[in-house]
Length: 97
Image 1: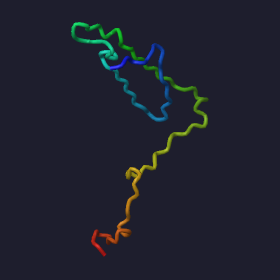
Image 2: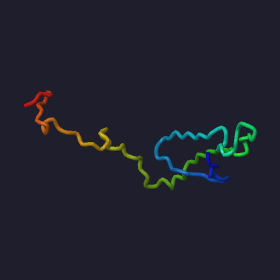
Image 3: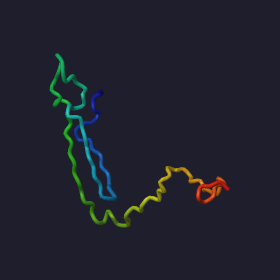
Image 4: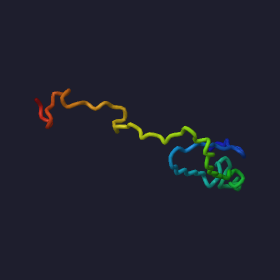
């Protein structure tokens, strides 16, 4: 495992336009860059990085002009075009013509 590149004070910020469930996870052994067992084992707390979460409510003026996102026009076909039965020469009930 490589040493974690995160430094104290690093953060990321995002604006959630809909209700959001956010889950953060970290390995309980730190970043695993030190041996945790065997003759060279060290305390993994040396490399653990605490996580913090802050949730803010934006100022009302920051939302001027904002509209709730529309539902995606996803048809469930993963970008594939549905073939019509008529194009395949198949009758409406699945029988050949």
